[in-house]
Length: 477
Ligand SMILES: [Zn+2]
Image (cartoon, rainbow, N blue to C red; front, side, top):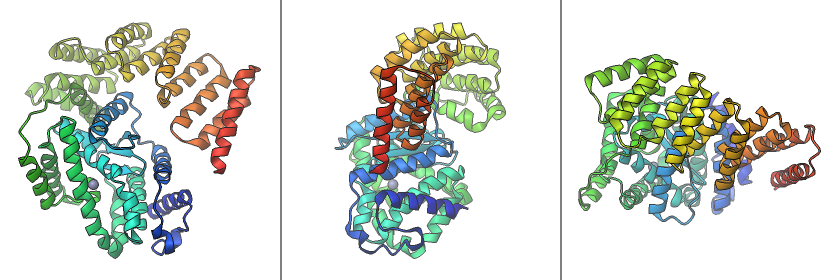
């Protein structure tokens, strides 16, 4: 079963590459080795993998998580001064401790890694390492290096997909690596050089972006300890990025040249980590866990612990308890509150069917925290369920003109059109949503569905028809 899925992924990638690479004949790839992946081909592989990963249903759609990972990721990308800055950071709902980079700048982080990180800089150090794998084009260089490199690079792509599909600690990954056998071992030196390079450049990026460089060896060490304790369940990060004592020592060596500096964790990190932890613990366990955490004062941030309790109550729909815990979190946090606290407040009100109140609260919060994408989404959602469709339409259209590449705004636009019974526009918006996810097949279907809806608006119709032509063209190429 797992193997079959791998073959599907491999076949898919090979079709995109248009290389004479067949699933039954993998290690023997003839003169392919002389070819190099172009950046365009790398992006195509990455996009194909993203479609597969999205189909697993494990990709985290939570607007706060999406926005947060991209914020940290782009802070690092800017500091790394890489030429091509097209990166996409995404989270996967998976309790195993892992992160991976795919060709084309797609960087995935398992929720388990974020929950396990003791500091934000640890998460940043992993992202910085992955950014270096992408910017140094390690996948493409493996292809250049040796023939079997093709197999490895396609396999590690398949591995990422498999790990996501397995949705657990990646038994599939282990099977894959074992299956590679001697070929993989031949590659280890090569891989090791890439890991060293990613560590070295990652550390530079981390420092340039203003994170704590000591977090890199600290996180490696903790991973390794964790690995010893849970031997049968080694974090996948260790398998795909083998951590050795030499790597830790190297990282510590680089560190000794740096002046010591303490970097405080951002509230965004502290709140979101608890949200993910609460989701990972599951509804019932989360309430018990946070009640005890708050009672025993076992926290680094009291506001985050109380927010965790509020979120845990929200998960079990105990909205009054959730609201009370959230008010305590706000008091402890002080100042002018925080987008995460306001977003949850809006969700609680909606849970209580107080849609109009939710709109008022979220609108006020949006104007206080300009630029918070999560609050923008939340306000549109609340307006839609409150039946304030004209306001929701205005807000979603403003948002789209501000962020035309944002898929999530098109998804919301489609919802508003749906509520307005404007089916042609609804399917067109869904088409635009899929275009932004680079899923052109489903996009085409939506535009074709749009054409089948009643309507005579000439501009709308010709716009949809031209979209269909573009997508069909894209498919032929
Ligand atoms: Zn690595």
